[in-house]
Image 1 (spheres, rainbow, N blue to C red):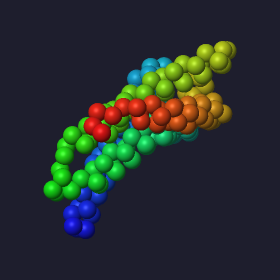
Image 2 (image 1 turned 180 degrees about the horizontal axis):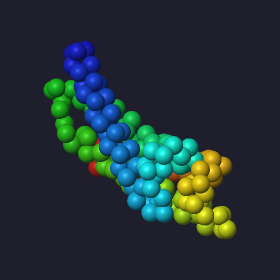
Image 3 (image 1 turned 120 degrees about the vertical axis):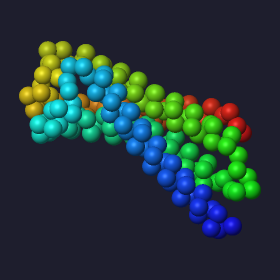
Image 4 (image 1 turned 180 degrees about the vertical axis):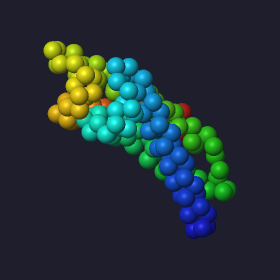
Length: 165
């Protein structure tokens, strides 16, 4: 019995790690597409610290938003036993994770666009290309704040979604 629980907990951990990698990859590609004015990976390859700071802020924000959903999925997987292998019990956590990822991407977009509108007279993308660490830091901070607030609201919202009791 205890070995069975350990096996399902380890399986849950493996699934969670895979989902984290997929989620961050998706977030990375999406942020890259949302900022057509800037090729983040090219700038990071060149050693542009300002862009790296901004990009870390974006990934951290997404991570903050999806963390509760990933934890919920892990907890659900670790509760499954061989006698009670109910795949339907995973439907709600997976849907919650997908919604969290979509909302994280939308929140990133809204956060970036709102920030660029608030800072009229500053071309953030040009400043990032010029390695302006101050702009990269404030943009990262903005995205982290967006993530911190979004995760609180999202957590409450996702508790309303229950396909399987």
